Amino acid sequence: MPESASIEPQVAAQATVKKVNLALQGGGAHGAFTWGVLDRLLEDDRLAIEGISGTSAGAMNGAVLAYGMMEGGRDGARRLLRDFWKRVADQARFSIFQPTLFDRLLGNRNLDFSWAFQAFDLMTRVLSPYQYNPRDVNPLRDVLGGFIDFDRLRRYDGIKLFVSATNVRSGKIKVFGPAELSLDVLLASACLPHMFRAIEIDGEHYWDGGYMGNPAMFPLIYNCRSSDIMLVEVNPIRIEEVPTTARAIIDRVNDISFNATMMREMRAISLVTWLIDQHRLTGKTQLRRIHFHMVQAQEEMEHYGVSSKFNCDWDFLLDLHRLGRQIAEKWLQQNFDKIGTDSSVDLHNLFF
Image 1 (tube, rainbow, N blue to C red):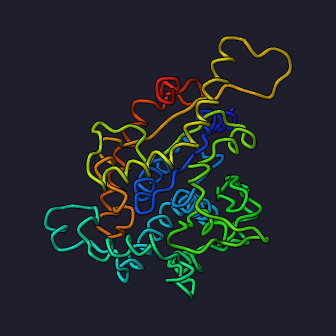
Image 2: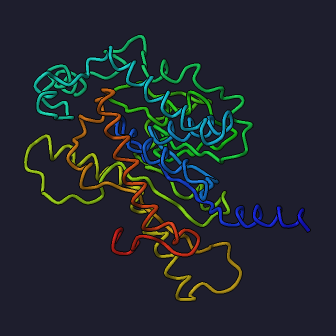
Image 3: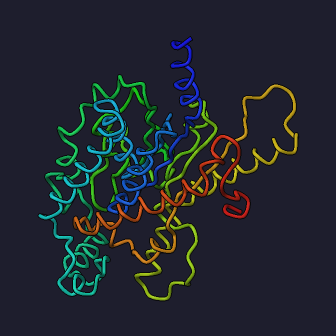
């Protein structure tokens, strides 16, 4: 009797754990917001992560999280994520992309007043990385090099990780699965074509995955059992003010471009969900209802322009991390009960 009594609470505790899939957007330094969200989610024992689909910084966050989980569980993942972003900041101390003294005094996180950033921005409009970067220097390779043992990560089956990149020649999305993960795959997913040479993998060349999937949802639908997808949004879908300056217009065009494929995919998911709810899909089908969730800070993030995605100052990264934790805490308080039962956002109003 005492033995069975000791087992029942453990079974009950395990039954309360809810599995979710994470969709992690790319966004350069803004990925530190995602770090904060993940840091808070990893603290919650009621959640279990089944799969992750990531692009660019989202893919790096996902890879570091998965490797940390493999090495040291939830606490190991939290430590490794912090170590990764600290390494990013340390590497950035030698970058030309630095906030000016004027920016620091005003608390401005954008680099719009940085002459170095402005000069680089102009240079990339007339020269390609094949011309101004003949040695193919990529600081991300130094940041990630030796940080993750990809041979071990490829064998890890605790979390299914999918990384998106864009095939340069075909224009199609390429989703690298758990068995294909490598340093080059992560670099390909974050390869901005005006900054880095295309990454060659198995005879094909790839650019940033954000052009064709930021991030891709279908790997989570087809390869994971959980019907809950949580998108950690970095690029605002909606903004309140119409941009009127040249820089603000460019920033908004970039946001729209990197959200476009994700928006189309979400419309398809919304349509299928509606058809299922209306019992319009009859007969044998593998389609199932998807519960969609979104962790976002649109009001706060819309104030950061595209140039701030190159600002890897440690204080800025910590600010984004704190914001991510706060938003995740608020989301858990308001929406945790909906995991496994319903979407916490109105898909039709959001994506149509």
